[in-house]
Image 1 (spheres, rainbow, N blue to C red):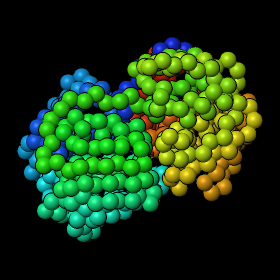
Image 2 (image 1 turned 90 degrees about the vertical axis):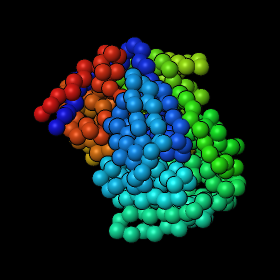
Image 3 (image 1 turned 45 degrees about the vertical axis):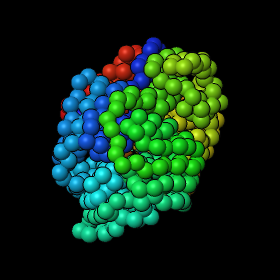
Length: 417
Ligand code: EPU
C-alpha cells in the first residue's frame, strides 16, 4: 500500500503547470460512443479515473490509443452495451455511458452505483430524464437496463442541479429525434467544455453555461479534435496549499475566469492574487484569516474545494463556518484533521472551525479524493511528519501531485509500505 510522507512547514514557491480537467475529460471520453468516427482529445490528465474509463470503453469495443497527453477514441466497433459492477463501483462517472449508448445503439445496461464516501448519490435524475425522452428503463439484478428505438426530444426540468445528469442527457439528446430543453441545467464549466466538443462533432446545442440548454437532435455525429479545459479544482487546490503555507506561486496553463468564487475567498483570507488569461499568481504574506464557505452549484463555491478550505481554516486566524449543501456526508476529513490537532465542531451539514496556531504531524487516512487534498495541505503546514494512508483516492484525480509539490519546494515523498 502506498503512502505519502510530508515534512511540513515549508512555504510553497515557484511555478506549476495545471493539467487537463478530470471532470471534463470523463464525459468527453463517453462522447466517443456517439460516433463511429475518431474523437481525438488532447490535454488528457494521467489519472486512475481516466484509466478506468478507458478500460470500460475498451471493454465495450472502443479502440483507445494514448500518446503523451493525447487520447484517440474510435467507437466504430462497439459491441458490448454494458458498464459492469466492477467498473461502476470504482468510478461512479461510468454512469455517463448510459445516455450515449441508448442514443446511438438503443440499449444500455449500467450497474446501479451504490452510495459512496461522500453521500448516497442516487442516479434517479439520469433515469427520469431518459424516460422523459421515451426510453423504457428497468432496474433488474442491480442494473439499470434502458431501451429505446430512438430517443425523442423532451422538456426536462431538473429538480436538483446535477452535473453528470446534465451531461448524460445533453449527450443523449444530441442524437435524439427533435428538440430537448434542459431546464435548471448545471452551469459548470465542464458542462460547457463538453458542449463545445459535441458541437464540434456536429451537435446542435445552445445555452450551455446557462440554466436552459436547448439541443436539437441530429441523425449522426462525426469525429473531431478537442483540447480539454484546465482543471479548476487542481488549480484551486494548489492555490490553497500556497496560501496555507504562506507561499508565493504561479499556476501556468489555467483559467482564472472559472475560479471566481475560490479566488474571492482566498483574497478574503489575505492572499494577493493577480491573473491573466492563462496564469494565476498568488502571494501570501501573513497568516491566513478565517473565511466562511457555503458550497453550491457553479458559479457559487464548489463542493470539490470545501475540504481544502477546511485545512486552510484550521490554521487561520479566527473562526469560520463551512456549510456543505451538495453532499450529505462530505466531512470525513474532519476526523482526520482532529488527529493533526485541528479544532472543528460539526453539526449536521455545518462545521465550525476555530483556527489554531499550528497543526502537528500524525498518521491520517484519506477517505475520498478531495479529503486527500485537504490532508496534504494540512500536512504541508503541520509541524513535523505527516503520513497519509490510502492515497489511491488521490491518484484518481490529481496528476503527479507529489512531483508537482516537490517542484514547489515541498518535502513530500511517496513510499511503499
Ligand atoms: N443527485 C440526485 N440524483 C441524481 C443525481 C444527483 O439526487 O440522479 C444529487 C446528488 O446526490 C447531489 C446533487 O444531486 O446531492 C448534485 O450532484 P451531481 O449530480 O451534480 O454530482 P455528480 O454529477 O455525480 C459531479 C462531479 C463531482 C462533483 C459534483 C458536484 C464528475 C465526474 N463528478 O458529480 O466531482 O463533486 O459534480 O459539483 O463530474 C470530484 O471530482 O471529487 C467529484 C466528486
